[in-house]
Length: 491
Image 1 (tube, rainbow, N blue to C red):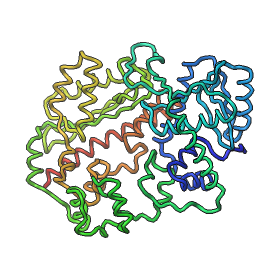
Image 2 (cartoon, helix red, strand yellow):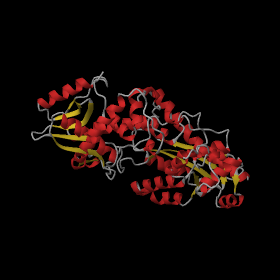
Image 3 (tube, rainbow, N blue to C red):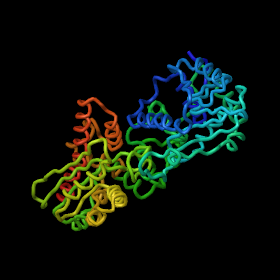
Image 4 (cartoon, rainbow, N blue to C red):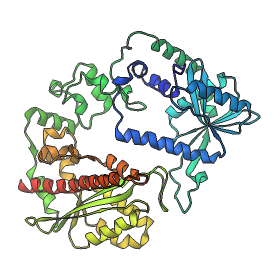
């Protein structure tokens, strides 16, 4: 086992909450399971870090074979520095049982230059604290740190041809920001060591800190005492207000006093929950329906957001549409037809996507979406990247209507929606026989991850299964819209 008690990740956990740090070190098995989205974020960070190494080429990787061999990695790093190796990747240092691993280390006669790589598009306070700890460990290990920089992604970079790493990445020195934090780092290191040698879990109740800077890894563990339909389910109520209620002993929705100062939507949510009677504004629903023109297309897009732009005329983290589903009804009483598109991987999916979409929506009729701002913005982005389609795209945009509106405006509200107007809550509340929970891919984030994974997948069976799951998910999104509109029309 490695001899370190703290690392930069556990240090940041301790800054957030000493209970979080203790549980992470001594009760790791109690930690919430990583979601597929979290795993994808970790992988993205690793991939971006590897790519950034090309900014400082011809380095030697000093990373250990396993997480239990960092002591060896520290020795390897020390030897490489003594040999005046110009560039070292994953350089490890251990001072006072605190481990720091530098993404990129550049040797210079006048001192070491350290580069920490982040897959985000800005420098956060957490990254500064992270860097401050690394500087504390490296400098106290006997090395002179000439400079410390954070390398992150430039979200204004537009790819044109071959990837330009000098334009994709921004490198910014943070030395002047981390030097004043060195005393603070030392004090926290000493405090966290005291916490870790205790025999009992620190007493720390849930609070606003559970989300800052990240949602705690023991979020569910610490909330076992919170029942369903609690004050934390209130929609449109500031987090501070929820915890003010919690600290005053109010946890269940039914415990909220009648004179509580709640927003209009939260009060409506509470009233409907207590009465268990649906809120239905038939006049407003009728007005909404009167604005819809058959034939109707029920339309939904899926996108993915590569951190590193894969295609010309795209930026980092740009939403790239790769799939759509269309259900079509010629009239209110006609049978529905279905059209769909799912791009092949390898090329920019946007051209085939828009060509197929324009063909499938060429007939007259409104294009009904759920949260139209998302689809409209994607269409505008495609029009900007591929001007030849601009005129047709603008015609489609003028036909887009939003089915989310009556639920967002609470023309129809059921207590099972839990204050949300997301289709993932509205559908099971109004059409319980339809559900996303049995789908392999059941939300947009998973769809995005699944499609991006296909660019590297070699197993033909897995590719086929993933594509089938993507089609099923997107199809349910638009079929759900068909059923929700029928529900509104039946009123």
